[in-house]
Image (cartoon, rainbow, N blue to C red; front, side, top):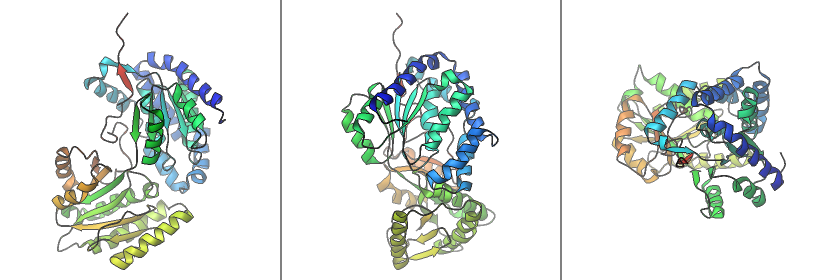
Length: 413
C-alpha cells in the first residue's frame, strides 16, 4: 500500500462506490457473507489461513500457539444467526428509522490483532463500507480479512479497504477521513484526542480509547469442587494475548476466607494456572522496553508484598499497599478483600476506565446489579474465563456495537 494521499483517497472512493451494493444487499446475505469469510480463515487448508498462521507470530510477537488460539476464538464468534439477531435487536432499539452512513473510516490499534474483526465486520453487517488504517506493526490480520471478504464475494468485498501508512502522516490521515461520514478510533487516549482535535467536529468520532480490566473471585469459587475451574478460567483470562489488551485483567479481587488466603490462592494461580498454561499457550518474546518495566514492577512488588515468579509470569499480592498497574505480559496482582462490596468500592475510582470485569458465578449478578446504578461505569461484566472472548454482539465501551453507524433515514421523495 502506498502512503501517497491520492492513493489513500482512491481506496476510500472504491469502498464508497462498493457501499451502494452493500446497502441494498439483504441482511441475511450480508451475515452469510461475513460468516463464510470467517470460516475461510478457520479452514486450516486454505491459503489465507496458512498465511495468517505464518505471518502473525512474527508480526505480533505472540507465540504460534497463542496466535492460533486468538484466531479460533475470535473467528468462531462470526455466526450468521448471531449477526442477524444483532440487526433485529438494533431495530427493536429504534434503528429501523435509520439508514447506514455512507462510509466509516477506522484507525486500528497495534496491540491486539483480533480487534480488527469486530471493528470491520460490524459496520459491514449494517451496510456500512469501511476504509481502515492498520498499524504497520499489525496489518496482516486486517489485510487478510479483506482478502477473505473478496474471495467469498468480490463485489461486496470491495466495500472493505485496508491501508498502511505511518502514524503522524497528516496528509494521509486527511485523505483517509475526507470522504468518511464518521471515524472509529482504536488506540491510546492521546491518539483519540489528537485525531478528534484535528477533525474539529467535522464528522462524528466513535472512540475506543485506553482502558483497564479487573476480575473478582467470590469466596464460594475458592473451594472444591469449584477451585480448579476458577484457577483454569482465570489463568486463560490473564494469559490470553499475553495480557496486552484492554480486556486483560490487571487486578484480581479475591474474597478471602479462613480456608483460602490471598497468598495461597496466588500460589495456586501461579503454579496450577499460569505455569501449567505456559506449556500449551507460551508467551511470546519479551520486548526490551517491557522487560525493563517488568523488572521495575516486580522489584517493587517483592519489596512491598508477596511476589511469585514463574517461567513466563509473576503474581503479586498487594495486601498492605495499593495495587499497581503492571506492564502486562502475564504480570498480575491479587488484591485481598472482605466481600463483593469492598471490591466494588475499590473499583469505583476507575469506573470510567474499566472495560471489562470478569467474575466467578457467585459474584456475577451482584456485580451487575451494583454497576447498573453507576452510570460512569461502562464495563462489560462477564463470567470469568470469557473476558478475552466476548460474543460478537457484546456491548463495547458501554455502547451498542452499531452506535454511530446509522443516521436518520432520508424522507422518501
